[in-house]
Length: 147
Image 1 (cartoon, rainbow, N blue to C red):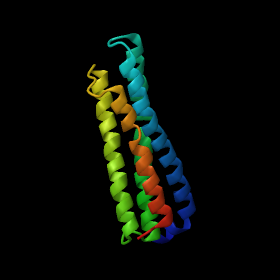
Image 2 (cartoon, helix red, strand yellow):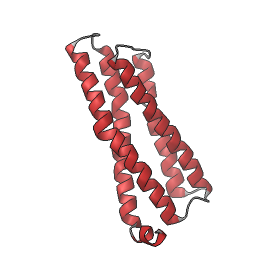
Image 3 (tube, one colour):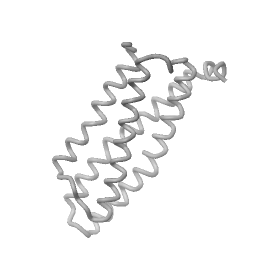
Image 4 (spheres, rainbow, N blue to C red):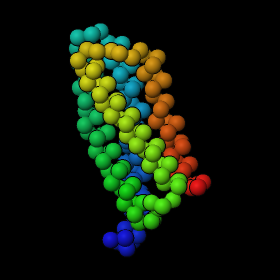
């Protein structure tokens, strides 16, 4: 199995990077949609359109992307034999946190769909910085492999 993964390493890596881009783009977009959704009058047609947009983004882009990112990432780690390396442990921890953030956004979308608005627009704008910071650290860990 590892020999097969090693032969397809560059294809796995390309696919992993492509789906990371899709996933992170969606994670950047969703909180922005939440801001606009919260600015729309409650119960309006505009608010209903945002519920639909958020649902589609979650189901069509974010969910498939996170699944493929995890599958290809694990395949890459196997191909590299990287499970004993410290940088991978740190990267996996950050990807788990990012996955939790994704889950939090999914739950928040459901709250907005029910008409609940627990966060302010400013809080949502700040929340939008989370994936950027985490991805920067993850990329450094994956490329530089500092430990």
